[in-house]
Amino acid sequence: MTDIYEFEGKTLCNTNSVLGEGPTYDPDSNTVWWFNILGKELHELRLATGEKKVHPLPVMASVLARIDAGRQLIATEEGLFVRDLASGNLTFYAALENDRPENRSNDGRTHPSGALWIGTMSKRAENQAGAIYHVAGGKVTKIFNGISIPNSICFSPDGAIGYYTDSRINRLMRVMVDPHTGLPAGEPIVLVDSMNEPGDIDGSVVDADGYIWNARWGAGVVDRYNPDGLRISRYKVPAVQPSCPAFIGVNADRLAVTTAWEGLDEDARSAQPSAGALLELGIEVKGVFDPVYVI
Image (tube, rainbow, N blue to C red; front, side, top):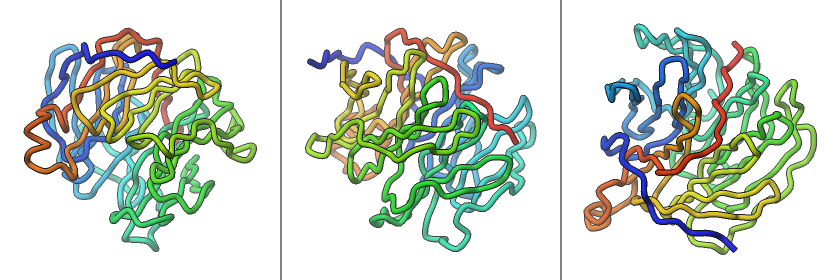
């Protein structure tokens, strides 16, 4: 049986993104970063002071990984770039799909080994037009093909298990992974089949105990699954389209979630003023920080 909880959290940032996505936390600066993909923006929120900045981008981007105190790796519709924190300048790092300008990056996450998994999809969400790639040391390797909307890329704390989904199919996949390289070490199997349930499996993170926290787009909830794929709890949020959670705070004991108002009509947006905001669930979690990317 799934325990269901009402929203008792708060709004961390009420800047309403068309498509808020890709949240991550930098423990060195106590800063939350996330994207407004369709608005071509990178958002920055300093938790200690509440200082907020919006960094315009020349391209649509969706995933950020820390490299070191002065650099970030970001995944965009034109490939991977190193971003200098001081200047905001972008330096080309690696191509993803130069032969497919109709595609863009979507969900992704750094593996404990320091490698990155990054998914791509059609800008028009065409069926099976995208893929998931493994990036390490600048080398890009396609690991899963024929993905329509890649999401839920995340890993067990020891790096031995990877997860992902195609949100169009709505099955959360589990695959064994080499902990030292971040490359798949087996064939994916279905962990959670929710094809016939309302909403879509979107972004996910895994906590220190191996439990999966998933934002369910279209259902206005964040679900928590145990490592066997059993949904044990459901947390309501005041936005019908939550997109991705992230552990935040100096102890990784808080959970934030990005949301979106993409596709909502005027009435729907009026009914949920939090659509597009960065929210925090009012619960204590046992999270882990996203690893740094090893360049």
